[in-house]
Each structure stands twice: as structure tokens, then as C-alpha cells.
Length: 370
Image 1 (cartoon, helix red, strand yellow):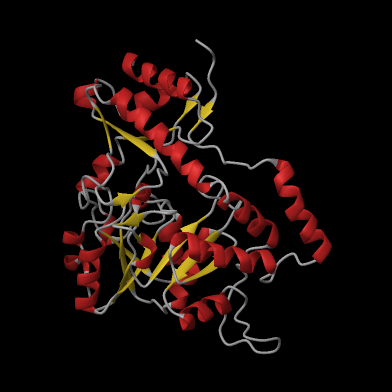
Image 2 (tube, rainbow, N blue to C red):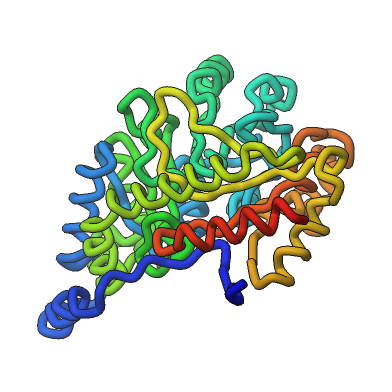
């Protein structure tokens, strides 16, 4: 067999000759950042493509998360899950907010709405759910709970570029949604991120916060941060938009190939598309049932790594199992049995537009023979 060297993701890079004219315009204008023309154009085109009213671009998704909490003046406690990338909970910590973890659903791996109410205290001010792997949370149940208790909802939507529910962008739910345009994402601006909001006043506050709190040359109205997307990032984003539909189409094809090849392997489970949802196919996670497959997830992970297939255990360990957070009452072992089980089973297999279908066959054959 041909030697593989396949990673879980690989960023799409458009042809260099298409990017050079953008760079030339930046060089000619001498406008490198601070809301330049490419930045403004990208915000407009993203609103159109994603079907949202307002979007504010950021230098990365983590700063967007931190700023979203500031924009809504969130304090006290926020309910979330530990089944995510650490940036979700780090953003709370940086705002001096106490994360309160609850368990996840067994099929979507998103926050379980049935577990939210019991975690609400007088100090709770918001819910921070994650659309895990781009699969939408139960937005209607979460909204009902938030409305009943007067809580804000900020969605970590870093995996959901272009995802819709019955034709409506998933980004239109909640008070705010936060996106990541990191190089590992479906849509990237090298690094980058955004906050989606629903009214002009909130958009203005977010824009002030990401620019040190300035509202004009001499007036600072809030202790903001420097989180602006620069013109090179924005140019990359504009060019990426020209390809995004084709890229998502390729990711769907790869996902379908995996499903077809793995469907009859006992002990390997994977997710199917959700009805009425347009997916973007951010990741392809599989879940190893040791009792049926005969090997643990870690044995499989190390075994395929020996074949130069570098999957990722997204998300392992749970955030609640990290030393930084394991002292929280809500993080105690046994409190989130589904999340604790899933984190021991998951491997995300390679998924990116340039992944050859023959390589997918080889990966699946290795899994069959393990």
C-alpha cells in the first residue's frame, strides 16, 4: 500500500495567482487594517451569503467569544457543556464568569436542554451552547428556557458555516452567535472569526469593543480590546467565498463515502444528517464501541497513526477533566455520564476538500482490518 501521511484537516488555499491582485490592492492603498475596504466588503458579503442581518469580523474566534460576553454584559454563572474546544470555556474564565457544566445529548452531542433548568441558580445570566460538529442545538427548547428565566443565549457556532434549519440560518437563533474562520474550519481567513447579531445598536457596541472601545478619534466609551480583522485576512475571506459552495459539496461527497464504507463495521458508529438541516460537514467523527469492535478508541487512534493517518480526538479530554476546571462542582466525575462516555469513544477522521476518495478507501480498509 502506498504510504499515507494524512491529517484530520487541511486548509483550502485558492490559487496564488488569484490572491495576488488582492495583495496588490492592499499594497497600493496602504490600508492594512482598521476596517478597510476589504473588511467592509467581506462583512456585507457574509451577511448576504449567511442570511444574517449584522456581522462583525474579528481577528480570531476566541476574541470573538470573549467580546460577545462583554457585549451582552454577562456576569455570574453561565451554563455550557464540557464537550467542546477549550476556547469556549476559556472565554468565560477571561470574563471572570463561572462555567457551569451540564451533560450532552447522546445523538447530537450538543447541550441537553433537559439538563439546563436544574443547573440554573440566582447567579445564572446566560447559556452558552455549542453546535457540535455543525449540528444545530435544539434551539427552540433552549429559547423557551432562556425566555422563562430571563437568560441570554450566546451560541458557539464555530462549526456551522452556512448551516440552516428549514432554510433559516442557524446563526439567527440566540442573542449572539460566534464563528471561527481558523485555518482548520470549512471557511477560513487564515485566522479569523465573527460575531453575528440582530440589531444595529448591538453591532455598534461590538465594533467599539473590538477596537479598544473607541467611538471616534478622541472618545473611548468602554474598556475594549484589539480584535480587528486585518485586510489580508479579509481578502482571503472574499476569495474563499467564491469557492465555498463547491468546497462544501466536496466535503459532503467525502462524508457520504465514509458512511457507505463504514456502515457495516460492527462497533463503529457515526452521525447521519439531521432532517431539515443543511449541513456544512465540518468534521467526520466516528465512535468506537470497545465491546463490539474489540479495541478501545485509543488503540484504534494509535493504530491508524502508525499508518500515518492522523485523526483527532475531538473532544478529548472533556474541558471539565482539565486541571484548570476540574475543581468546579459541576465538573465532578459521574455528573455528565454521556459526555464522559463519548469523549472516550470519539475519533475525527480526515476530512477536507482535496482528500482523494482512494485515500478514504484505504483509511476505511485499515479500520475494517483493525
